[in-house]
Length: 234
View (cartoon, rainbow, N blue to C red):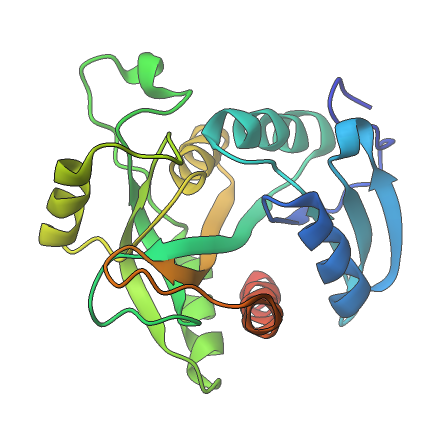
C-alpha cells in the first residue's frame, strides 16, 4: 500500500495498462479481463487486476496530465514491481492522414516540460517507447481494419493550449497527435529499466475540428485495449 494506491503487495501485476480515466479502467477490466478484482480506489482512481489469456494484468487509472501519471507510475514501479506499463488513451490527431478512430503507436514523445524536466537541466532527453512493445503492437494492429500510424507524438502539459504557433511547428515536424502523459511515462520507464508504450485512439482532430461521438469512442477504444494486451504478451 502506498499514499495513492491502496493495493496490497501481490495485488498488482507486472503488466499494467494505464488509461487516464478511472472509469475507462473499470470498463476495460469488465470487458477484457477475467475475474477482475478492484484493488485500488484511493481518491477514486480505480485499479483492477484480473487475467487475460492466462496472464495477470492490472488496469490502473493514471489521471490527466504528466504530474498525475508520474505519481502512479512511480508507485507502480517502485513499490509494486510493475515491469511493463502501457498507456491506453485518447489523443488529438495533428496530421492530415490521421483520421478519427485511427490508432497511433507512439515511437517518441516530445514535450515542452514534464515532472522529470528539471533532472536533465540543459539536456533535451528524448523519451522513446520500448522497441519490443512497439513492434508487437504494430503487428497486432495490422490484423484489424483500422488505420494505424507509428511515429512521434507531442505530450502537452496544458489542455487549453494558447500556443497555436507551437502546434504549427509540431505539424510541420511530422508529429502525429497530441496527448498529455506519454513523455513522462517513457522517461520513467527509461529511469527504472522498464518497458513502456502508448497506444492511442484518435478521438478528435486539431486540424478539422472533428470529434468522435461517445458510442464510436467505445468501439475504437476496444481495438486499442486489444492491441495493448497482445503487445504485452507477444
